Length: 436
Image (cartoon, rainbow, N blue to C red; front, side):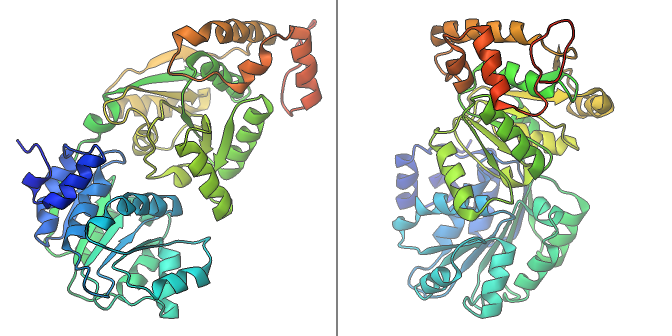
């Protein structure tokens, strides 16, 4: 059995650097991919985020780059800016071993600044389809000598409608090149892509069940659309996540939920496609550095993100399919750590829940929260749990909402809630429940 990267063919200087980064044992997708990529074979690998797939293509690419050449020798195409930034950050940790220069080209950056940097000696380019195509049409980058091409998150790239841009980019590359395709699924579109651009590829598959589900406690919360926000807050207060990602279906729902959470005093922010690049980078930096406890995001914005320390995933909106579910919950339970995934299901999504359990061949634990919570009861429970959470939840962090609740009477709490005037919040019960 292969125990280290040198057995896979990675040079000693690079393995020494990996050891300093505390990366010593290759993952299954790395074991199955690296030897073939080093030999120059086309490779198509099915692997989820969190399997170590980035190093599976990055290590052999860096080893095969000739730093004495001034040509762009490798190109990595990703569907999102966040993923481009993430791969670049991984590359930056390793490139000094050989003196390789890397450019990250994605939308939202200063074009002139990128062009200025490109005048240097660039060996590896990592970018999104739109910005790469922009550079190619400006003739600010030249891919005539390209040797290696990676399509990362290929299925998502096709799902987002980038196939025409990818086709256009490949038209600027030589016919003779090594192509690597990494995808969470082998659907017909990905297979067609492989057939068009790859020559006798070596196929690699890593079963998602062994990668993303074993260390994750899965919970279904049955609730209603009207009661979902209160149900989410109740779970957050009870579970005290260290860091959590909350998934919503649309950008508008992400913004609305984040605004509501911040209004309740939680330490949260949002991530979606309508943010400026500066804002997106700040949010991601804050979350990586654990300055944010809760990140509310769309599937597209969070696709491919690999962030350590995420203890919980909350599926606020039910996902469309089982693959999306696995992608979402795979953000937690990393590197042998335990994780928790909570999915909120309303009655209209009962059929989707049955299909999910059937696909996973699992009977997921369920909690009933159909009835609306009594606000005074929830407030008192939040106070009690906040006061007793210090010793019991050493890994967790107290939410801002609980901090604000401490030392307050229920009357004070209601007055503060009413002053905030959040739409859709319920006021104190008298003889019946009324809108505040």
